[in-house]
Amino acid sequence: MKHLLLSSETVLLDNYPVYYNYVYIADMKIIRNTVLVEGTVGELKNLLGLEEVRRCDIFGHGEMKIGDEFTTNIE
Figure 1: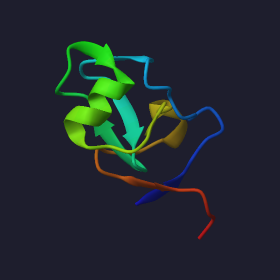
Figure 2: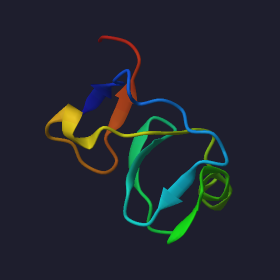
Figure 3: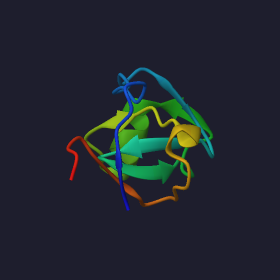
Figure 4: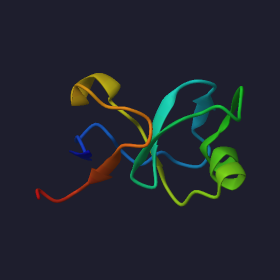
């Protein structure tokens, strides 16, 4: 299932802190951080080979699961 990005789901800078078990949008897919207990977006991107990490409004999408994809276009 594809979800539209919400306005609050902004790109996070490389020095932004990330936390274990938090949900993020990475390269337009929902991921859960299971690799860093505490670190930065830059470290998470390096470890997982990601290009972009965004905030994720988990409650704003209703039913969603890890691996769901996002789009910026209405299909």
